[in-house]
Length: 361
Image (tube, rainbow, N blue to C red; front, side, top):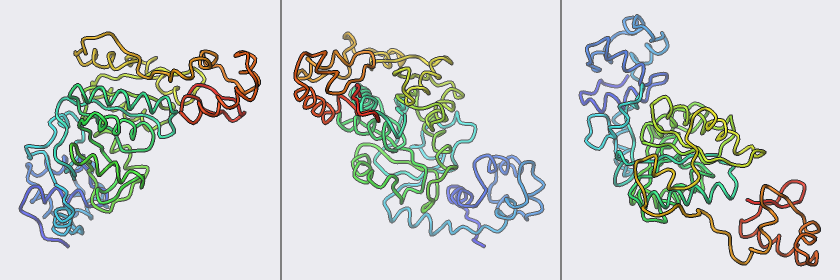
């Protein structure tokens, strides 16, 4: 049994580290004990179990206080991270709108998002086109002074963070594991770049691995931090749909990018648009939702390489070709068409389908 800390932040760190205890349970404790968590931490399990919504196992965990909060706070400092609660001046005020705001935030980096924040999220299994679009959105919005918030996952999240960094802008990642871990492993270098002009955030104790529970919890914080949420690509059962629902429930502006009708990676976005999300196809559309403008006509976000101008019109409308069909349309030798298909695939302009034909990425 650990001693009861006198510091309110340490009390939250202790409760945050106990199994089964979360923001909702702590809110019930505060209500039951007049806002004094030190009294709650000293209460016997039987008394705690009489609080509505507090189960006997959770009451026993609170009474036992088996979480080394002092060691946790010391290791956090040693790793160069910060610990914040709602009383810290750096705490994002936008999180107050959450029904269950995090008890604490572990933070790595120089600053936290302010009210000028846009979320860009989407599938881990995105298309090349989707990744390029997310990177372009993030780059242009960062240049306009907006924070870019995402989840550091593969695919759209990574592209969004990278786009913000390309513009020397600020980007924040909310992760679904302890801050001393990095997932996916290849995000180590990206994370190192982010902490210079942005941050990486987590509500989970050090050492907590990611699982099916932590990612949805992470998603509500992403939604809470931003003014507008942009979904670039997702299937109907993708994790981004959870984040989008959180954003909608919080009254945030929800935007979605349309895609091909037959693409699984666009089905979620189409469902969101059907249900009332704003359709966006350019960064100017997003800025309009934010009440801003670049003061110039909307620009094409992804320009086709000029050397492929001869071939790409034949892939309009989702058309797919192999070397033989493309050679007929382009009136050229099959070998020339095959070489061009390969080069366009390497450049990310086309993607190869399971049947061997190519289509626009």
